[in-house]
Every structure is written in C-alpha cells, then in structure tokens.
Image (tube, rainbow over all chains, first blue to last red; front, side, top):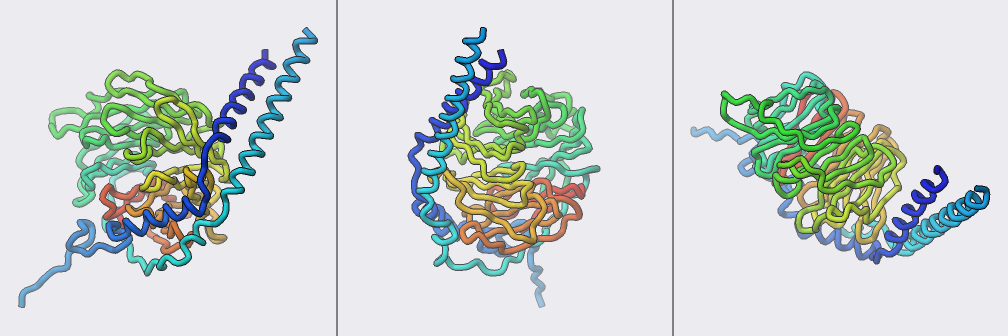
Length: 68
Length: 353
C-alpha cells in the first residue's frame, strides 16, 4: 500500500536525521585552525605551491648549459 | 479500512513533523558552532605570491571529448577515457601512448588506475565497470583479458580502486554507489541515499579510515562508512549538481565543484560548510576539483574552458589558467604533487606545472 511505503521512507529519514543529530561536532574556529596548521606544516613539501626548480621537476624544461 | 488509513496518516504526519523538528535542531546546532569563518582564521597567514603555471605537455590522440583521467602511482603514467569509446594509457613525460583499448560503448565517463599500476578500470554508458590488466606483450590483445566487475542499472559516472587492486568503488546514474570484489565480481556493499544520479566519489586518505564521499544531482554530498553502508554525514548547501568531490589531504575536510559555479569546502569535524570559492564573474559550472599536496591550493576546472586556482585558506583566487579550447571535464594532481593534469572536451589532456 502506498501509505505504508511512505511511512517506511519517512521513518528512514527520521532515523538518518537522529544519527546526524547525535554527532559531536567541533567549533569552526577549532576545525579551521587545524586546517590552517596542516597547510602551513606541509607547505614546504608542496611542489606546486613552492614552485620546484627545473632540475627537480620532471615536467619543467631543463635549462641548456653550453660550454664556452 | 477507514480506521487503518486514518492511523497511517497520523503516523506519517507525526513522523514528518519529527523529521522537520530534527532538521531544525540540526540547523540550530550547526549555527552555534559557526563562531568564525575559515578566511578569518587565515587572516594572518602570508598571502601567496604570483604563480607561474604553464602547460608543459599536451596529450593528443583522443578522437572526441576527454571525460575522465587518473594518474598511476608511478607519477608519470596517465589513463584517460573519452566519448569516442577509447581508453588510453600515456607516459606523460614523453607523451607516448603505451596502451589503448576500445570499449563496446561510447561515453566512457569513468576510468581509474589500479594501485599496483598493472591494471585499469573503466566504464560509462554500458552501465558496467570493467577491469583490464595492462600487458606489455605485443601479441596480447588487451580487450581479450577484460573482466566485468560492476553492474549498475544506469550509467557508471565514477570508479576508484580502494587501497588494493582487489576492490573497486563505483558511483552510478542509478543513484547508488557500490563496493565490488574484483576477482569474483561480487557486490560487497551498496550505498543508498542519494535522491538522484551520483556523479562523483572520492576515497578518504588511507590513514583516516574506511570512508568515502560522493556527490550527486540531488545537490547533496554524502559521507559513507564503507563497512556498514551507512551514510554518516550529509551536506546540502550547493544550488545545483555536484560534479566533483575531493578529500583535503588531512582527511578532515573535502571540497566540491558544482554546476552552481561554486566550489565549497566542508569540514567533517565541524560538520558544516566552511568556505565558498566563487566570484561574480564565474558563471559556468565547475566540473572537477583537486588539492595541491599541502591542501593550500585548490585547482578547479570549469565549463568556461578555464582552470581557476584558489587559495583554500583565504578564499581568494590566485590564478586563472587558459589553454583548453572547450570545457575542462576532469582534473587530477599527480601523486607526488609536482604537476596536475586536466582533460577537456577539446579532445586533449594537458599537464601543468
């Protein structure tokens, strides 16, 4: 019966919402501070951020040395 | 019977009102945690300088729109798939094609490299995900060794191997995601909850445990527990289809790209959206997103043929990259972060560094 299936569907929605309401979330200030910390700690190991030199980046063209 | 119908209506009505009050409570709780914005926390962080990123390689060979690509763990090989039904494996250093296979369908919307580098997975309008072992034997026909792994009831939109060559996670236009055993083709777990086509998925970095995030045409991004099949968190702030989702390198957040022309960052511990990357001048949808190694940069490919580079912390755009002559459909940063590759409807792939 169409009635009971929408009851079942809505029950699932309620269960899901109860699950989500039970989460212990942290404040944005704390979460954001951790994101910032991760970025800064790993910045020097990020080639696209620091701009790796031609000698170490396989995609960047090698500068040609010519002996005079 | 009349009395039964009445009872059911009461149950339905009371359940619906409980759902509404729970939603309201969730919104209230989420609002309380919003004590500050991400870009405010990042105010004192040094601004990024000018970026010089150029196309370093152009991979030509597909006969039609490039729809998807993935890097091999060796940081140099790339697999790409196209509307013309072809899947090609490239050596991105030399731009040589190492393997090519023709699928029995057009619109191969998903492809992925196995962690071992010895196989690739792909699928699309055939509603399946198939695995092809890669062989260097010239006499062997790649298509002959094809193994059908996943079966959906609508198109395959995304696929990814898990930590090994043994399991594959798929997303489909049938509204579900599924986890499969490659060897037996057995369905290990299915994930139901999206109200429309699922367009993308990304696995959490291995240290963070067994979860993955998916995005769909229902504008929702959902985080799933792989073992139980349960949705553990859901986010619904986008105003249109979510085309791409990607985890932040620490695993504590993920970014999304949408047809609403914005990219957004969701923090899993704060359980909310913490940043929006948008500009009034950007009006075309974002099709694909990926982070640089430290998570400071977010690269996003758009339907207006450009790639925008965003400062994740400050929320500002640091660079705009031109080069493709049609929509950018797919974008991934290489495993060691030295470059990123973009695929486009202009039939080419470009490697940028």
